[in-house]
Length: 367
Image 1 (cartoon, one colour):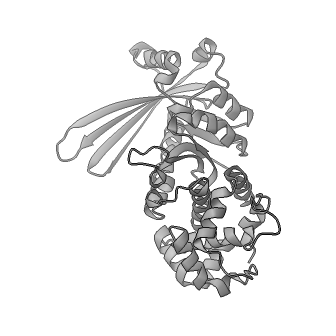
Image 2 (cartoon, rainbow, N blue to C red):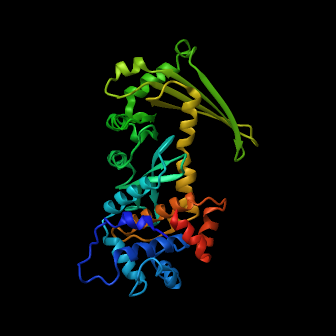
Image 3 (cartoon, rainbow, N blue to C red):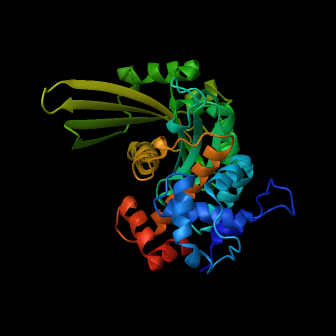
């Protein structure tokens, strides 16, 4: 088996003093990777799992001194430069051979268990890029709270090859520089409009509330049921040449869209209505825009929810220095490997099977 993940991690700088290293960094990273794959949730469990799997692990690396104790694993990951690890992760995902197609959703998630006190202060907040079609996490960056996502998103985009993709971001990332960077990478964007871009939002809002202007707008409607509700979504799209002339600083601006969602409670019959506005570099095709907007929210179900339910990420109390950020990065590597494994088992069952079956474990890592 060729553990390609470790090959890309080889450029990550070891923070320890050369000549005083008992447990090589590649063995430490492989231990954490395999432990996380086999349902270990913290460093103590990683040590326990890998101690039981030591003979199997020695098929790939020497492990001359055995498995590093949990305290050593924790200390090394606390000191390891997370930016180096994140850069190596992005390089590894690019190497997987999955050409980025379709929607790349960018969104943030707070690792709640990493909070420093009961108020939630100091909790790790991560911004991820998620390829909807491939089901893969492409890259990750940490920020100091949700309000600082703006600074992290350009760095995240710099790590990715996005040619031909559609980048979707919520209102926090609706910034001129971010739109320009996406266009420069030969990709398209769909950005949500809210109060942080008031002039742009007001112009779009005025357009869609004028019946004369919207009379000829192409529309797309879809209805779905679930969770005790019936939802009807109506998407209207329009050419935004006039808006681009009023706001020339927005590179590539080609269309605007209004997505109106009517949600009816099946029991009470009560209906709520909400309209969201978007700008895009794509043509004003409402069906295409509707599919991309819907795909954006897959990052909540296929990434954030999976990490919380299958990996219990929010319950992890690792808090010391860089340890929570680096451990989160390795969880995402494991999630990518499990997503690429072709069987129809749930993520939780795949992790259980990896813990029990050397053959299955090896197959997952080989992918």
